[in-house]
Image (cartoon, rainbow, N blue to C red):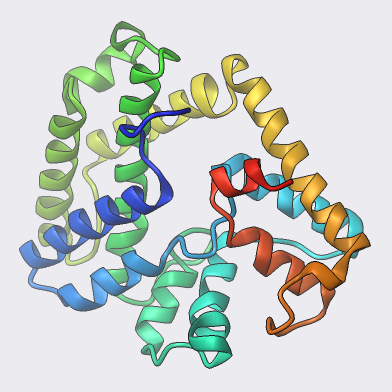
Length: 255
């Protein structure tokens, strides 16, 4: 939506980094490692959030038999694409945290596991705020038991989740949530997927996002000479790198 008060991938990254560093400090872990993972975790995310990722994955599989995962693309950005193809001089722990912030495998470090969990804490709560501001939800429609436990305002929910994360992790010697709070957060996440991310009110936007991704990919298949020449890789990889690097507004405005 138009407006300056909705979150973007950049503001989500800043929120994730700030919350993650707070948790790492409370647990006396490596704050710099935690922040580096958080800052890099979504660098490879394509436009239009979950819908854009699914659309790019589907069109690449149909056209080239290849798959797309934004965490793998984030790792490619820092290892291959940054500094004009030289990549960044990052530690194995940072690269592992970026790659495993989502997906089946757990990060190797406690710092990486903080980011993996806080990523969800951040996007669930700021997406609730944005959905209410955009008129897609009302506060009264939120799951009452979960809201009663976590808090009515986004800042209060984050405060509850962070305190629970720190206290549970300190007791467990690992990155963990209490059962009650963890279930409440997952229930809120499921609610958001049902009502907002995949809900009927967003169907037209999902269709626009999907068609935009498909149109851009089809254009570059027909006009590969219009891709940046200096990017490494074969045609499917160069298309992937270019499309995944777009913001929502850039993709919508692209011819």
